[in-house]
Structure formats: structure tokens, C-alpha cells
Image (tube, rainbow, N blue to C red):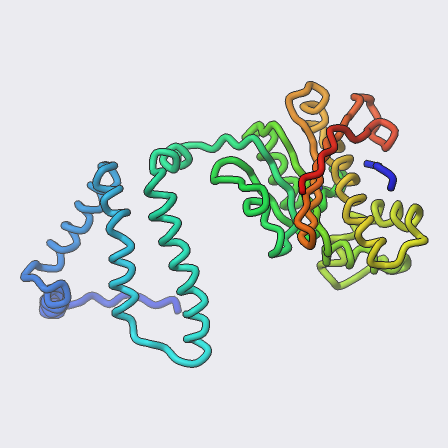
Length: 307
């Protein structure tokens, strides 16, 4: 296989009698004899204290799971579809509270540093497929990788103009100064299958998916030329890897990426995750630093197979 190269209405004024009634209601709600203004002032003072006092803030964080539980338990039970949806989020809620207890509070100093700044070494471009979360597969922890995900993990060339992927690239490279860009593809990619299913004469489409995956047409053409003897599924697998290499070449079409790669301050890598066999291939782009960007100016190095 060739190794070629990511109601608007006005407010009416309330009378003093109304205000007194409202104040009494609020006092009753809060279970105290405080006037409403005193309650508000007390809340504001507490919020200011939490903001300025790290110890009190951490204490508030530690107490919040119980507060969340109390609020949740006091809510009326729902039925039918709404209940099913609630069950879905109930699991997410528990996962969040587990994360908070086991990770956030346990490593509070680390998360405090992250609240001030981030300095990831990796920029990862991965597929939006729910089965291939790069943080799960490669074990990235918060602060370690700046990640953008799109359909088929494609990187459009610079001349295609702005999109969310190259906006993320610009920030990661120029602001965060990441040291590595990793484009991760995967097996059974629906985006690549959509790419390989495109008709040559289909130059216009109302499909957002088709309009996006055309970015990978060079990889499709290369696959059709070199793997025409393979069946469609095999061609798709071939194109899954070929599109990664084409995305690596497209990365070099961005002047600020090419410049850093030439200087040796930025490295570009490809990765392929086979979730059927649970294997991972990793390779790096070897760019010779010429003014042109073509297959002849690039090669693959440091190929590894993790199984």
C-alpha cells in the first residue's frame, strides 16, 4: 500500500404594600424573619466571600454534591418519555459527581493550575464517531491535548478558507504552541464510506456530509487508482489510512505550520485506530523542507504498531 501524503413589556411599579407582602413571602420561603433585602445582601456577601476565599470555595465545592442531591430529591417525579430522558441524565449526573469526587477534588491543585492556563503538548484531530474518543483510547488527561473532532478526521487545505478545524489549528499552533499535531483515523469510518460513495459527476449536493467529505477527494482518487482490484469495504479501509496522509500534507499548506515543522519546533503525526482488533498504528511525517509540498517531498518515518 502506497505511503503517500486533517414580549417586550414595561415593568409596573409595586406599591409599598406589595413589596411588604413579597418580602414576607420570601422570608417565609427562607424559613427566617429576615427582610428580603437582608436576604439578598447576605447572599451577595456570601458569594463575594466564596470568590475571594479559596478555602471557602473548595468547601462549597465539596458540599455541592449533597446540595445537588437535595434539590434533585425534592423535584416531582416524572413519567413516560420525560422519565426516560431523566434516567439518561441521571447516569451522566452520577458520572460527573464521581469525577468531581475522585478527580477534581482529589487533584484540586492541578485543576487550579488549569483554570489559570493550559499548555498542551498535543493537538489532536480525530473523527466525531462516538466509538473513537481519543482521550479514552490514548489516555489524555485534562490539559494534555487540544482536541478538535469532525466527520472523517479531515484537514482541509489552507486555500479552502476558514472552518472550525483550521481555526482550532491556528489557536493550537500559534497561541498554545503545541509540539505535536496528531491526525487520528479509525476503522469502519462512516465519513470515509460517504467519501468513497461519491459519484464523480456529483458536483453539487444539499447534503452537509457530502459537502464536507469532498475535502478527501484526493485520497479517494488515490485509493481508486491503487486499490481498484479490492472490494468496496477494502477500498474504504485503504482510504481511511490514505486520507490521514493527505491530511498531513494539507497541514503543510498552512504557512505557520510549515514554518514550525521546518524549524523543528512542531512535528506532524498520523494514527489509525482499529476498534475491531483494538490496535493502533502511529507514524510521523518526514518533511524535507522544500518549497513545494507533494508526495515526493514527504515520507513516513517512525512507524509503530501497538497491539
